[in-house]
Image 1 (cartoon, rainbow, N blue to C red):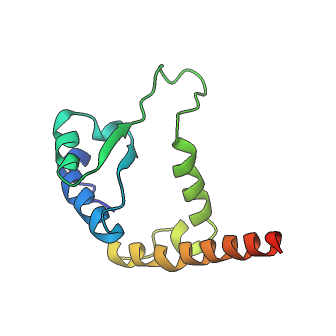
Image 2 (cartoon, helix red, strand yellow):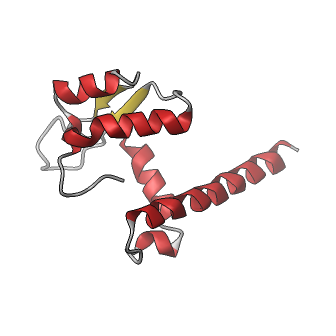
Image 3 (tube, helix red, strand yellow):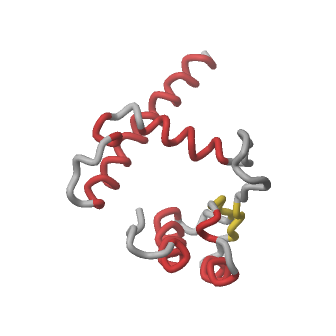
Length: 121
């Protein structure tokens, strides 16, 4: 999560550094929205070994347009919506809300793993 009173591009280097720190430098490509356009954002993430791919709107918003890789983000939001504490802003601190995502997605991944194991046997 990033602060809302700053531009996305201003926070991209710290975000890339944190992602690489948490994942053990396993992230090579990040799909981002148009808030991360520009050379400064690309250079900031390249320092940490992350390449940005900006998913842009090719046309004006006059009709429905399927954006590449956007379904990954929307699917994750849908999964998080299954947990009531993640749907509403009940928490005062963003660290609390971020911390609640870990057990929520751990539960979701364990449920998917259990489903895969039962299908294979």
